[in-house]
Length: 224
Image (cartoon, rainbow, N blue to C red; front, side, top):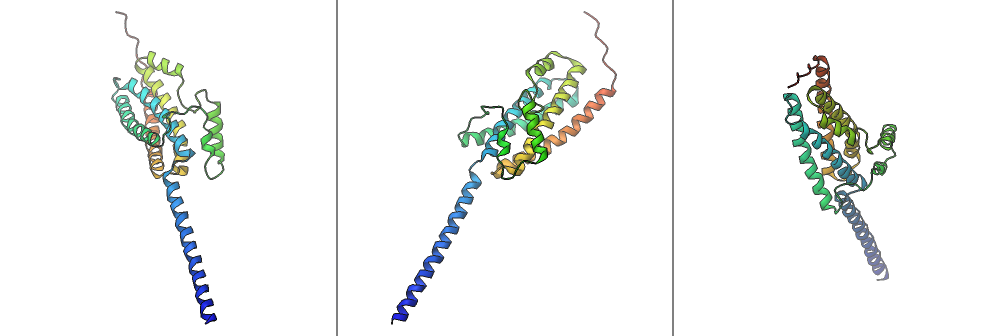
């Protein structure tokens, strides 16, 4: 009888251990699922800084929608349409997360908060960010935007393409980083789309700049 009682108690103890292990595993899985929907520093930083980046791209593109060049107008409309949609999605995330739409600093230090140490390319990008007067390489300064508004014709098209090329080239590394290190799937998806879209536009802008450089300069218009 004592052996039977001991065996039953041992069985119950083993069952309790198994149940505790299963509960622990379920708890870990639940925490993992929760971590998958809670934004991390990369998700928030990307949404805020890319929103700021998109705002300026849309602003520059809106200046060029009525340009005489069909290619410039089409590029501008494409940038406006695509980036306004992405901007709306990123602002939707930030509202859901109770985070401000725009960052309260120009520091890109959130890119140091991934699970892995920064690569040499990322370290260089962050140094370029620190050296930039706007906090991000490629982001146009107020003076450059004023100059874009003041120019006309070929000179304005060239400056627009140059500014947008630098703008895209400065934003792609940030999007690529978020595509790899953001916690939330939707953030990684949008970041990946931005890398593809802007890489394609970079190639097109370079072709347009080359074609613009090959065309003869515009003759000054006679007075009156």
